[in-house]
Length: 225
Image (cartoon, rainbow, N blue to C red; front, side, top):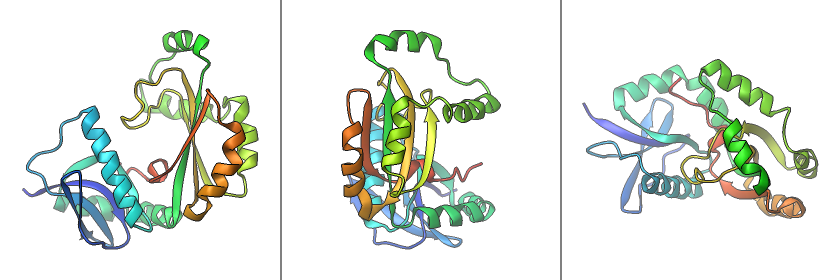
């Protein structure tokens, strides 16, 4: 069978590009296009590979109007990819519409250094899907004090918001960071990045980090479900 390594989905075709020696093509899959890499085998799971993939997705993002990154990529047969896209076409279409012309800003809330050791001992990863969903829901109600003021400062710029508890680590790039309390993701117009940066500047400190613009990882549905 002919397998593809899928990095993202988008609504338009674009010329192929080469990033870090990796050739990325856009192929039509049902009513969308997949940004894919043709490989003899799936990539090894490593920090270097995750960083390389992040660079590739960022480059694709800079050249597209709408992009749904496939978190961690997907090694899949083309026929199966068509089935997945057909099955999830409604959620994919809605997500593409949501992210069109927009970018993700990421806010990390970190525990003060004196609390990190206690936090590491008390936190454990969810063991079931139900527990994971409950943890995400509870995170909405235990955000740090700075979160409310920050949200108010950018309310007019934010199109959509996602929140993750501190147990969820970013994809490979900050796994070593300790004491993370929660993450908040804001979807904003690409034209609003400078205004968002100015509005959030007063909130940036040792325990609140703000980065972006990024591809909208947090706003992409999981098409494999």
